[in-house]
Each structure stands twice: as structure tokens, then as C-alpha cells.
Image (cartoon, rainbow, N blue to C red; front, side):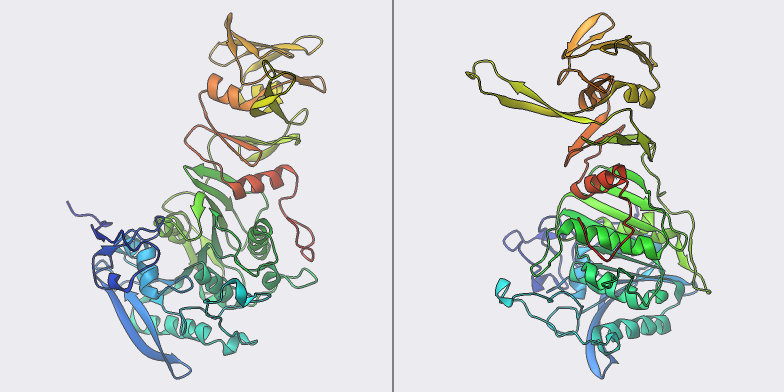
Length: 501
């Protein structure tokens, strides 16, 4: 059987998993370091050399799939490698060549001109070389027009347009780590040449995005943008912003520039935590990847294309249009999120008001500890009346609100009482994770127990946020932070002159 997307078997080099060895070039060797490189060197990848800018010779790699039709206008993807990597390294580190095989577009993977490091602003500001004495440091010219790597990318795009039948309205750029910084730098200065840009693992410093007065610093205009932020990415040396603030303000920058709605649609699929923002000028996708270190997953190129780039175009008048994509940018059909000390919750892809605040409650053990205690569990308790609204159940509290009977849509009846860890289910008693609480005239019960045991749903907890879905989902750290900001009415700051977590 013939496949448009075909995984080739490779020869593992398990003795050299710390970096991409040069022996990979032209071979079938695979080095799977934390899931980063999981395919052999593409057979159709072609190394190219030439003088494109400043009279200097540069190197790049072209991938033209067998499905390419020179009679049809064809999208172009420029993939920028991470620091200390190469264009061919980015080609095997990502799955762009596999997407190209399926879709018929062309990829080009340029090398940074020197030291395998892109000339990008902000990387070495306030950086002490003692933190990494072996790291080659690039000098960055003050004027972007004097930046050779930027001129190389600009010239390379023109060269590809002259060499192939490129659709000028569908040129995209993507980068990882330092390549993400390069992609963002290009987008902020020459984004008008692209329909969309994507990056993973290398957000820009907030001071590059906003001036001291909080105004946006931009010359390239709006475009469709994708941010992948691995949960375990970490903050590079020399950064004076927290990782939370850096991720947020990169997102805020493009939300503001693209005039996005501040409330996204949220979808968590396995470990992929998506926030889809719709913009008047262009859309934005934010992805936090659970349990993922610095770098990018092998399937990210497919995600970029299927969710965003496949339906994105820059029209002749400069506007960005979004049409139907291979995969729809839709929030979870069923999702509930809550966090302690907040009286708002997330349900139906909107913010909902609860009758009182959620409470984080500890189940404590005392017996046999001679007056001491041990925490045997921590749970988020929410108003029972709210859970009844979510699940369409009948809620009947007693006159003193200390007990309540709930009738579910399937006919089951549940009875709760203040201070009791028991729940009567159709005249049968079952223990909950923790006792029912009473706050502000409302009974509160643990959302984890109710949704798992009673409703048979998936529950994920991260950073004091509980996320409930009807499918497998693992809430990640930065998505939990995003949800908490939504529930705190902090979806978008009004003043960007002060960078806050």
C-alpha cells in the first residue's frame, strides 16, 4: 500500500543520543534524544550553496517532494534551526518533509551564517559568558538592515520564488529555540512577506516586544502566529523575566497586534494544550505541551499545518484570510475548569459565575499520630448547585442548605450533607474523596470525585487548576496559568509598560 506520509525505518545510534552527529547526513542513522529526532535523513533533501547577500557564501537545504507540481502555485515553508544546529538538523528534527510529501509544498532549511548561531537581538543582553563559556556569542548590529542572517532569509525567499512556482500568498516561517527567536525577529520586521509564522521553545524577551511606555515595537504588521511553549522549557541564562511572564507577553503582543478576542477556545488533546484565539486581522494559536522539555515534538509541523497554515493566506492587499483548515480550531465540546479561591469557572468555552468561591480542601489523617496530622489528599470543592447546572441535574437544597438532594438526568438520586464524606446514591452509601463543605449558604463537594465517580469523566489537575473533559487530557502548567488569568479577569493587561507575572 502506498502512503503519502511514510515513516522510514532507521538505524539507531543509541551510543550518541546527546546531540545530532554529522554521520547522520546522507545515512539512515536516527538519534532519538528525548523524542526530538525520529526520522532518517530525507532522501530528497538537497544541500545548496551560494552567494545571496553581502557577497558571502551561505548554505541551505531544499526539499522538493515528489508530489510537487510545477504547474501549480505552491506554498513555501522556511524552517529555522535551533542554536548550534544546522538546516539539515532542523529537517530531521521536525516533520516538515513528511507534511510536504503529503501536501506538495516546498521546504527550505537555511543555515545560520556563522557559529551555527542566528544573529538575533536580546539573546546575550545582560548575559554573563561565565554561565556558558563554550557558547559562541554573535554580535548583533543595531540596525536590522545590517543583519546578514536577516538579509540571507530575505534573499532566500526571493531565490525560491524565482526557482519554483511559489504561491506568494502562502509563505510560512517556523523555528525552534534560537530559530524561534529568528522567526519572531523576522515576523516583527518583515511579517508582511509571510502569511504565518510559528515557533517552539524560544520566546522573545518582553523588552523586545514593548517599549518602556508599553507600546508595541513592530515594523512587519499582522500575520497568523503559532506559539508552542513546552511545559519544561525553562528560561535561558541572562533572562531577567520569569518564564511565565515571557510566555504571556509574547502571546499578548500578537493578540494586541492581530486584534484578537481576549477569550480563546481551549482544547486539550492528550498532552497538547491548545488555546485558539480569533483575531480581526489574523488568528493566534497557543500550545503548551505537557511534560515536554526544550525543543519540539516530531508532530509539531503537522499540527502547525493542520490547525492553522492549511487555511491561512495573505491576500494581494495584505490582509490575512482564514478558511477551513484540515483540523478545526475549536474548543473542547465538554470542558469544566475551576481553581481554589475563585468564584468563576470555565465551562462551555466561556467564563461562568459561581455562587461562591471554590475551596481547596485537605483530607487529613489524625488517628494513631498522637495529635499530629498527615495530608492524605487535596481536592477542589465547588458549589453543588454549579455542578447541577453543568450536568443539567435537579438541585433540591434543604431549607437550612445543610443537606441537598440531586437528581441526575439519568434518574440517579444523590444526597449530600455538611461535614459528611458520604454520598447516598439511590439509597446506597459511598464515600467521597473528602467531606462536603458549607460556605456562604452553599454545599460544596469535591469536583474531582463528582466528575470521576459519578459522571465517569477525565479529570486532570495542575497548578491548582482542575480540568474536566469527556476524553483523555493532561492539563499543563502554562495552560493552567492561562485559565487562572481568565478566571481572574486578567485575560489581557491594559498597561504593557510594566511586565508582571
